[in-house]
Figure 1 (cartoon, helix red, strand yellow):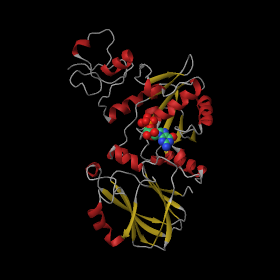
Figure 2 (cartoon, protein in one colour):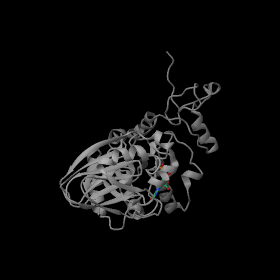
Figure 3 (cartoon, rainbow, N blue to C red):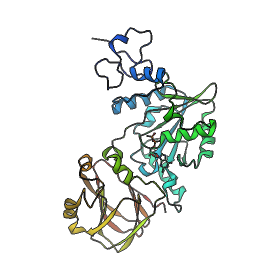
Figure 4 (cartoon, rainbow, N blue to C red):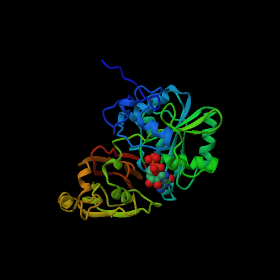
Amino acid sequence: MEQTVYCEGCGVPLQSEDKSKAGFLPKSAWNNEQVICQRCFRLKHYNEVQDVDYSDDDYLRMIHQISDTNSLVVKVVDIFDFNGSFISGLQRLTGNNPIILIGNKVDLLPKSTNRNKLINWMKKTASEYGLKIQDVYLVSAVKGYGFDEVEEAINTYRGEKDVYVVGCTNVGKSTFINQLINRTSGIKDAITTSYFPGTTLGFIQIPLDEKSALFDTPGVVNRQQIVHYVTDSDLKIITPRKEIKPKIYQLNAQQTLFFGGFARFDFEKGLKQSFVCYFSNELMIHRTKLDQADEFYTKHVGELLNPPNRESLEMLPQLTKQTFKIKNEKTDIVFPGLGWITIPEGGITVTIHAPKGIQLSIRPALI
Ligand code: GDP
């Protein structure tokens, strides 16, 4: 049997069969002194990043290399997609290294959001995922909010160690790193315009001082992120761009709300109350009677109920339903990647329809 040889750059197994896959090395280059895959070669010699088909496992294997280091791990999550942007098994992948959690995109939250409640919910959820974290910080990577505290925390927790920044795709990891670099060195858009040379771990290395560096790691794909099931044009509509303006719907039992064609909220039982919906300002919400909702969806999804549109509908997993008995007043039902609904009075039964695989959660209301 042939022996597996690993890229000295990024550690993926080398192969000469498929150019589009990770670890490709032309046959002619196998006898070179240093065997690195074509992607690392281009990164090293031309500062050029080549897209290759990494499987989800390839990314996780790379992140796992952090467990052999003595470093600080900075995990970036999207506060709008907290469950979706969690890397499962991160504790195992990063070993005993301390972890700080960064909740990004705080600029999108209404001003009245109770930040402490958000932080407490993030800490609790992280612990439910089996992650031991040192602390949580809320930032806006785009606007630069919260970076004084984050810089101080990174410096305190890292001492002289390296820093590994990890996160799922689309959480704003690149924007976060660029903001950090910009603040310390004045360089703008460092990791999107001119890539720093690849390193022995295949991560992008940005020197912090003579002895240590910050590493950007590949964005991990979490199949629970709604971003993987929508087109770019749908994403523009469902992702809030500006501070969210809540929309209020006074509903009686047996009424339904549709959030485009992505999700549905059936108010089954309970007293009339005003539900507060926190979603992208561009996402249309429609109200119908519960007993007509199935038919309404079948008839209008992809048209009146959009996004998704007719074409992108094919990418979306089927909606599946889950019933919740909400006892407490002031409770949020969270749709990762889309938004949340606040139930003001509690004592009600609701059924939520959401794309299969998207994990709903319940928390004390943030507002
Ligand atoms: P990455 O895939 O994790 O590296 O994410 P990017 O840095 O490319 O950002 C993904 C998307 O989130 C882009 O559309 C960014 O403009 C947006 N984004 C990143 N940071 C923020 C933020 O602080 N606030 C808002 N509103 N959007 C952000």
